[in-house]
Image 1 (tube, rainbow, N blue to C red):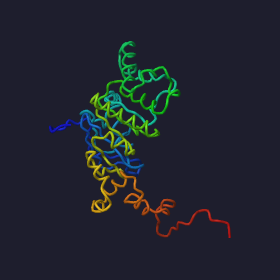
Image 2: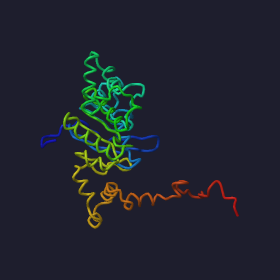
Image 3: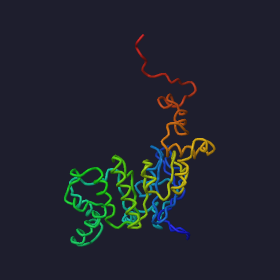
Image 4: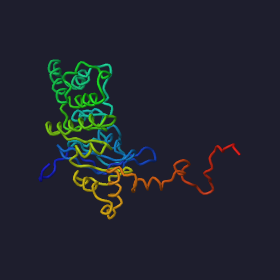
Length: 298
């Protein structure tokens, strides 16, 4: 990033996504500069995973536009969309490796499917990608023979196979112990520096977010509350209670999420939604919320 006009790898404009009558994403605007790491965070059900799936073209949108490397992918035919997909890689939560293939074969798969490279060149490329993630010596092992953290790294090596310009990470630290999670964070940072790729990381792990992010975006109920540099979120997180009290409702909500505090706007909102409403739905005139099965005990 520099002082010149930003060069965007990703531009999302007025994005909307609905599932039936439910609006999951509402007027999302997001820009990611080439070479930066953007962390997208939010609680469960905030829409962050749906946003990721829209950006990679897995979900059709209900409004707005998504540009990847200058190409608007909304409305593209599948063949054209697949050409754009060759320019980005994805690390899924589980690693999404094929259990019947060795680690090396998993990494080689995109090269065999999408290039005309000779087998010898593919073999060399696979070794290079595995070396980047510290797994070159494990190329002949199967996914069942390696740890969860190694599976994540193997999935990352496969995501790197076609030399992508953008890397997407879906909860890269999910299911990992703290040490392995920290190692994955270090790997993300190192790859961004070494390869200059643009990275978009969806996570709710705050330790990871503050380690890897250049900028961060906070989602809540399908809307973006803030897109700011990491330092802004760090300052908000570290405010004492008295200073935080003068901040806006949205900022206090973000602060509670960042800190994991049990009390605050998020928890109050959940309480106000009401246990009874959660069980029986909103009250309707003339309709009671009596359970359909009553106790038979006297």
